[in-house]
Amino acid sequence: MSDLTRLTVWDDPAIYGALSWYLAVAENQRPAKFRIAATVATKLDPATSSEGALWVELDRLTPIFLARWEAIRAGQRLPPAAEGPSLLELCRELAYRMLGHCNFCPWDCRVDRALGARFGACKLAAGSRVSSHFHHTGEELFYRGSEGSGTIFFTSCNMRCAFCQNGDISTDKDNGEETDPRTLAAMAWTLRREGCHNINWVGGEVVIHLHAIVDAIALLGRDYTPTQAELARARKTKADRFLWYDEVPDAALYDEAFNAPMLWNSNFFMTLESMRILRILTDVWLPDFKFGPGRCATTLAKTPWYWETVTRNIELLDEWGEDFSIRHLVMPNHIECCTYPVLEWIAERVPAAPVNVMAQFHPDNFCDPASAKYRDKYAEIARRPTHAELEDSWRRARELGLKFETATFERRNTFGISAMLKI
Ligand code: SF4
Image (cartoon, rainbow, N blue to C red; front, side, top):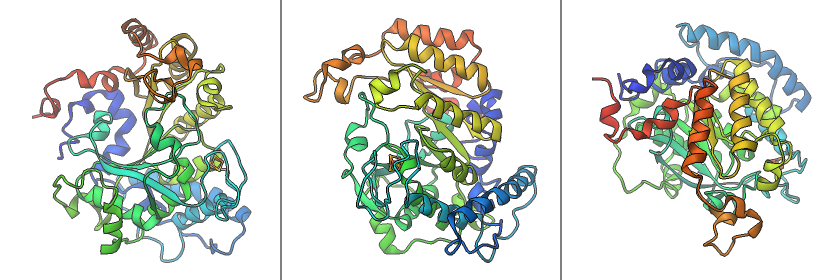
């Protein structure tokens, strides 16, 4: 039993009930979904088939995949990987086809990012940049555990939150290092062998890098071993490279092949097509649900269609029986218009989801009065939330019966990780 399993946080039935698949994969008791996808063969040649045919094939194979996932959840062993192309390669090919008329997110820019002559709202061509990757010890306890969450932090975003607390990373498309799928796979491979409990794909926003991430996951599902050159390239962005982590290959194996839960840590502003691909590859989802149904997403983040997109995507997770937890950031002066409607929607539509009602908002980017970037129009959120605003938010969550206390308050235990482990 690893330290992750020994965390007392799993004694909360709301946490265990919502995240039991993730925990089983993190502990290598079950294969990650990308490993299952590699066992589902396709007769199509992904490279030569039309995009329409590929989507039809995804629809045909998804129920087969889900039945296999269900059987494996129930204890069946993983069948051998397909010798020819599989659902994994199908997902990879679909992501690249989408890149050619980009519709990863609801901006639906329809630009050919592979060509790179015109740019969409995220301003990206086909290249992806990583700002850093590291053992993240700041995520929720069930993700960071004792060894950290294996975080790969991409640059650029498809939203424009005026208060973004990673403004340099999300708005500067040239930040970080240019990467490629093999280097991404090397990052994930190393982090997992160093003991990270999951691979945490995050940004900026991650869906705008869908093709590169799906490609990296497809590599990991097919006997990938990085070369020394790939490891050296990956190491350039390893923020904790000066700390010593023992590599334990067995920590990353199920049935002698690479295994790790894939965590999709996202603003959830993505299309149904992206969701359909990610359903095959994601073991646990972490939607960030910030804005209410009014105009706040437009005025504070220049993002139309926010509410309908994010609620549709979170409802799908519930309908699909996926493991997920939700984050909601309490913003000053946005309790009535954002926090209450978000919490009420969760209570009505996905009441079993663990929720982290977060207090750490601080004025940053265009909302920081101490910054040259500050804009008066954001004065209403140019401060931290008050004690009363936070208490009101938590009181409402309590009244609604949300499963939020464990995820929100675990840091109040000041005695460190050892106090949160079962003897
Ligand atoms: S990822 Fe979104 S914002 Fe970027 S080009 Fe594609 S549709 Fe547009």
